[in-house]
Amino acid sequence: MIPARYAASRFPGKLMQDLGGKTVIRRTYEATVATNLFDDVFVVTDSDIIYNEIVNNGGKAIMSIKEHDCGSDRIAEAVENLDIDIVINVQGDEPFTDRTSLEKLIGVFKEDPDKQIDLASLMVHITDLDEINNPNTVKVIVDQSNFALYFSRSPIPYPRDLNDNVKYYKHKGVYAFRKEAILDFYKLPMLPLEASEKIECIRYLEYGKRIKMVETDVQGVEIDTPEDLERAKKLWK
Image 1: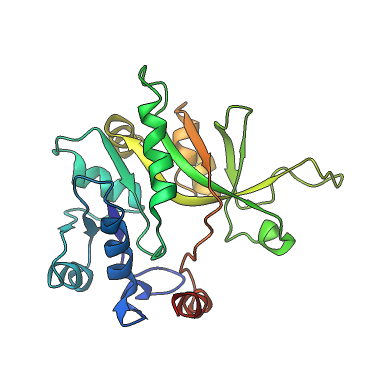
Image 2 (image 1 turned 60 degrees about the vertical axis):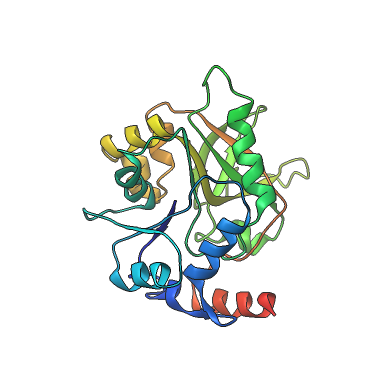
């Protein structure tokens, strides 16, 4: 499932911007389909423009019935009555989505026969201080088994003493959910930590869900700003 909103707050209409002769959302959809990992791939949107862009180019899309504040809610509504086990959330602004990272996420559930893991997500090791301190970069800290302890827009852990042994990880907004977990998310109200940070996966932690983080070295480009789009165009070439 690829949640896709037209009116993005930082870069409205970004998913319909041109990237190498096709729109960003179409590039993301086609990259996801091309992994050959999924029984089905859908764009889930509240926008006629995005819906028509996908369907008119041979893809599959679902129109949201209700208004939603986040992608997880949008996906939950779409999958509620579908016969599925695992749902992968690929962000619509990630046209460089790759098979390797998604395969690792799916593998988490194959290695969890007792269903102890509610969802899995990706993280990338980062070393650039500007990125570590950038509030647009969501950081994650994990325990020794790579279960998420917390997500924040602040640098975590705080570098009180410079320590070469501390690693910083950027959270990539690609998730894999058990169906029950995402439906629970949809029904549970937002709590103060999520409201403060504006990071939806904090809701899972606040309600005691377990998030397995998977390290990947694939950075790609998430298109949040016009500058990101220019970087994506250069990378595409």
